[in-house]
Length: 112
Image 1 (cartoon, helix red, strand yellow):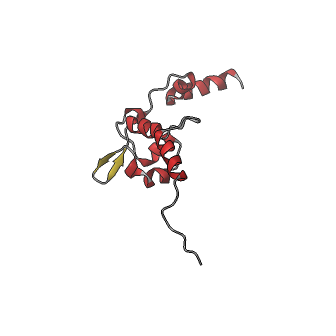
Image 2: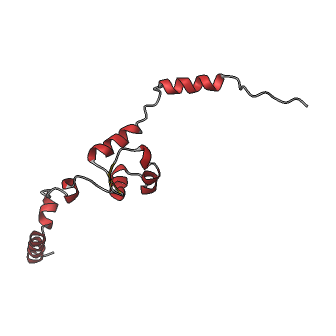
């Protein structure tokens, strides 16, 4: 590419704001300014299917404005923390379920 062509490309990028993006001087993303986000963006940010989020909304932190469900940054962090898994760590609930599994059934068997 000749120098004139390179200058033309740089001028075009500067006019459209693309030069700042190339140089790493990007302005903050518009979504960072919003207080709440919807299902689709929340699912994208959590890297999960939107359907999964919609099916479990009654058990997840969120905001509700009439019929509109919205999420804040804190809600997304709370949802992520709710599903934290630490391999090898046992909770009291795991211990209780293990005990329940060892108890004999109260149902009687019919003998023929």
